[in-house]
Image (cartoon, rainbow, N blue to C red):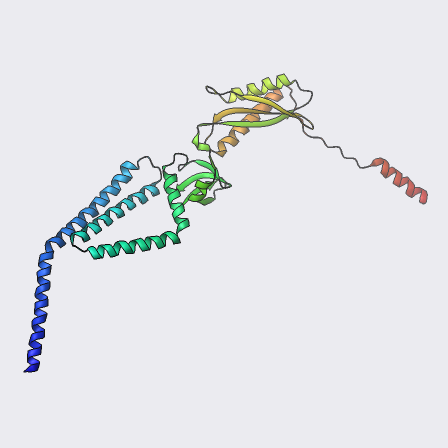
Length: 299
């Protein structure tokens, strides 16, 4: 009888507990359904918000990788807000507090462990909104020169003239000077040369300037500049500067090449000499003769 009584009491306690849980579930069902609806709404709102940021707000940003990362970040932030809102609806304040505290500790640990990566990430955000560097630009930075083929949250990739890709961390680009050839439509080209000492310098200046002017049209507020720079060992040296459209290093080399050919053709037509250094070698002929005579006398 005693055992039957204990079993009956235990069974009644179990039933009471189940009934209590059932009542709690029934009472919490509206909040639970509301929390699910709220979380689903925030989920879809995050997707549309990310799409809006990528297609509208970041329309002028040329880097697709940056657009994707920012859109994904907006989606995650929106979903997290929906998650915390759903917990608040379910009156899970303690769980919400624990989650926030854990997220703070984890975030601090990750921040300390990934300082360099975070530096590159923030630098990537800065670069993505700067007009000074874009995909397709020809730049010189950190002793490397080439065309920018990718900008992401970690690095900038440039393709050098020898067709080798160089990956440079974003922080290096931000912290160091860089030169962008594509940033301006026109640049100034310099060609150096020398003419013989017998040359008519006024004629040389006139012929050289005319040869460049016929080949490279100068726009408003631009002019061809000619300067004699030094009395060289075998020539009077000068430099000439002029403006031309430039997008990369190849354009500079092409302009210099065309300018040199035009100057040489003009000099040939006007009998202007471009001298080259002449070196006279002294083999000590007198000393050699004296040593030869001395040897003959000894014989």
